[in-house]
Amino acid sequence: MKKLLSICALSFSAMLLVACTSTNESVNAQTCNSGNVILTADFAAGRMDECKALGNSEYLITLKPENTPINSSPWYAFKIQAEQPTTIKVTMIVKGNKHRYLPKISPDGLNWKLQSHKLNGKRLIMDIDASQNAVYISAQEIIDNQYYVDWAKTLQNKMKVSYDVLGKSTQGRPIYKIESKSNSKEWIVVLGRQHPPEITGALALFPFVETLLEDTTLAKQFREKYNVLVIPNINPDGVFMGNWRHNANGLDLNRDWIDFSQPETQHINNYLKSLVAQGQKIKFAIDFHSTPHDVFYTMPVNYGIEEPYFVKHWLGHLDKAMPNFNVVLQPGNTPNNGVSKQYFADNFNVHAITYEVGDETNRESIKVIAKNASTVLMQTMLSNTDHNKE
Image (cartoon, rainbow, N blue to C red):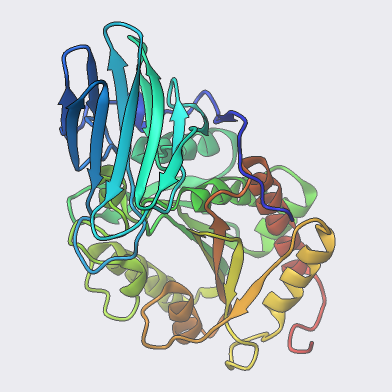
């Protein structure tokens, strides 16, 4: 599919709250106050590591990672208000790295569009109209911890799912699990938000899961055969702090699926192992992330896992079902890397994939692709196709 920049307003369900409307918690009180204009990141998921008023309605923001070394995914989120309407110039630079995300602007934290800007080397420059009505500037749409809570409660009200705390994060925040259970002993596992800035992965996870849980004949048949476990927000500390990649201990959770040195991965590993100890079976896992372009990272068909051609069949059917979307598979085996898909293959002998969604993939397209991926997954898992053969 031709990747389009989303230049129209991006609406989220009005029933869901986002960080910029709930400021009862604060992690980043960095502020630029020049009298008439104030820039602040004093809200959950806000981040503006340094801010300087340069005069003449110009401001310089410096972005810094939580620690190094780190993948270069500089996150920023701040709001702007002015006593009198004015236009300001904001320049952002990234210390030791380069920009990844194109700036988004929102008047309310619910509707987003691309903010006009220009890149001059490592400097990202924007002219922004400021007034008494706050506007929000962010690397991507803001989806904070409360968003996940509200989304899960909405699912619970509409569908037969349980919603419980799996465990606590490094800083004591709840890590929630959503489950749909039948008399089956077979499970599929859906994971999300190991890396805080990877918002497009979250935008795909929501419709993907909703499709699995909806009231259709296909979905009901699927849930009779397979239990569904969803852990949509694995890194709530990093989300709250506006981290580039890591958890509160400065570690990449998607490199911790061997050592399990962090409570976030420990809780998941312990729970999955407890299911297996009870005679349950993990059948498939999918982990949602973001990267510059849409890609599905898969296990190689010759790795020795059960039903070796299952994922190839699934994604091949998806490719045929969506002729305008190019399904890109990238098989790989990284046994010492500590990523989740390798963990599922090595511990449960099953397929797992990392579903990477493009940073600037059109938001409506993300929904359509995710819903189709979910539908075709169910069809493929329920089919009588021999997935041991190509």
